[in-house]
Length: 198
Length: 106
Image (cartoon, rainbow over all chains, first blue to last red; front, side, top):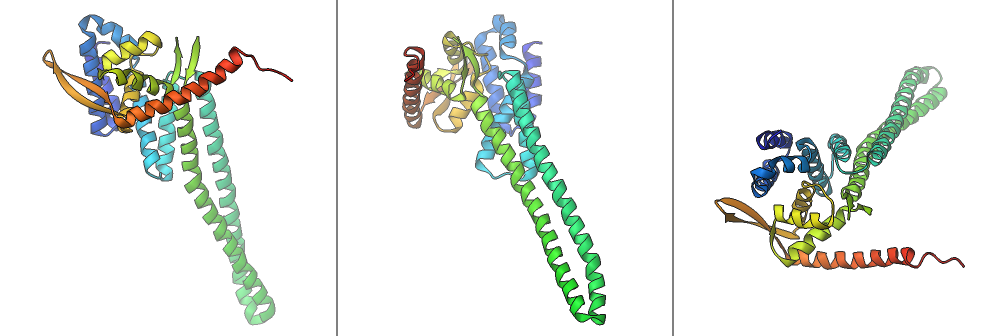
């Protein structure tokens, strides 16, 4: 690994960042190598760590900053969470801590996933059953109006509940994922300093 | 002694150094590394963050045919530094209370 390879790998890994960010970072490290001088080049490369780790950190910081300013859609939240977790594993934080965060996130996803799964099944079952009875109920209207009305009324109520459950699941995903993302981000903010010895 | 640093402590240290004089990345890193054992890449994200939050202002100055990017503290940065100082003071007192005084039981 020499300076050129280092900078080239760094540039590649930073390509996901907006140009302004990437250029600022590249300039900083070019300047750093210049100041250190060619004699210290090897030492600096060792001291800087891998371009991959640096890029993960910068990417996570950027994503976190963006998240604070803009509300996130579920898909972006999902991506943000992965980026931040990758950075936590790459960074100076103790591995066990990073694992804890990852597990917490996993638990969060599983919870949301289970809720949604249960909700979807409930909604489908409700809607399915209700629709069937609705058809029967409508036929009943012509035979025994009173009974038919009860059936139709009951079905419509069930369909309503089914739709509500569906809506609820939509909200759970819509709010739940950003919530997990925000949680991970605030954990990241508290952990990012890393350890130092004095 | 190894301490788990919050991201804030590093920011405070950077502001403290830049307060005294405008400084460029490499030099800042060497200075901070005299006190804290951090990696040479640790400070860039901190500098970038402080810049974006308006506590630092960056400007370029040519030096020996190449460029040096200096970081300068802003008015907002001064205020932030004072805030950090207060927080650190509170934190110090709390730690002293336990380390030196021990915790008293009734």
